[in-house]
Length: 154
Image (cartoon, rainbow, N blue to C red; front, top):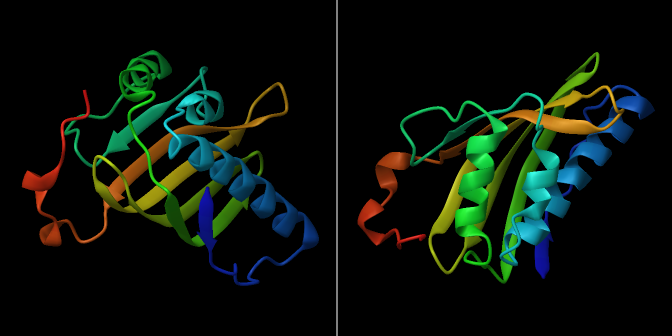
């Protein structure tokens, strides 16, 4: 899969901050690489089974737990594809055992043209792995979207 990457600005104050940013951005890109090949397992592994919530641009309610999002992932597994995607402007802001990754995502998929502002709140869990405990994917400039063009997912 061809992936477009923008150079990340150097706003991290320490090598440790840069290393954490690289790690979390790498986790996200790995999940996205799978996602655009129709494989939802990257996010199934990245999102916390212990504590997870999710806001999606097309769902008016917050998803309250991993079990609910897992059912959604099953429903679209093998159905969403894109030859390329553009992962723009990633930034990680970190505290102790928590970090916020924000980025913009652009992709022309077989189901929808994606233009999202993405927010992934990571937490270092007791097993030492960083996992997303909250995710929000919102449309960039929703007033410009033609929602009639969205294709049926299932």
